[in-house]
Length: 174
Image 1 (cartoon, rainbow, N blue to C red):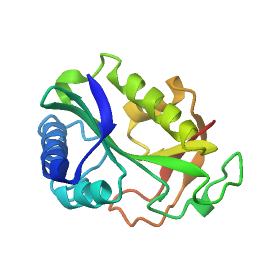
Image 2 (spheres, one colour):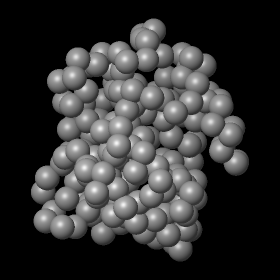
Image 3 (cartoon, rainbow, N blue to C red):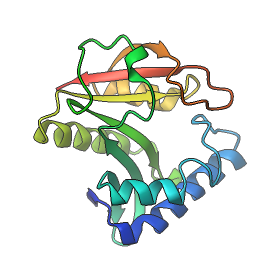
């Protein structure tokens, strides 16, 4: 198993991975994320993140086990959140679009990846790692809390996601 930065050439495969995860959630009526098939996260999103150097994958050989984005861009208005520390953009990283393959879930992979994200953020001299989830995404919320994140509140991040007026925000001080 390897966790690494994703190349631009791999972005299409990661987009297809995201599509497969969203389709699985939709087909099984468990789309806690409220992600939309081929809309978010999409191949275009993966490509943009890869070009920015922010797309990561966890692989086992050629198989993608998980994908995520680590970025200084909160992709919304984080000024509306009551963070424990008032940090400027650039002083924290945000974990976005974190997906684990359905056949790899509940095996500790998510915890390993979050641990990697915490170490990566610290190595890059960020002061915090932040994340946000839709209110119904209880698996992600539990993972964040298990990994030492603190819930800091819910806020409208101005993302205009249908049916999601507020996001639950989490922070791990490094």
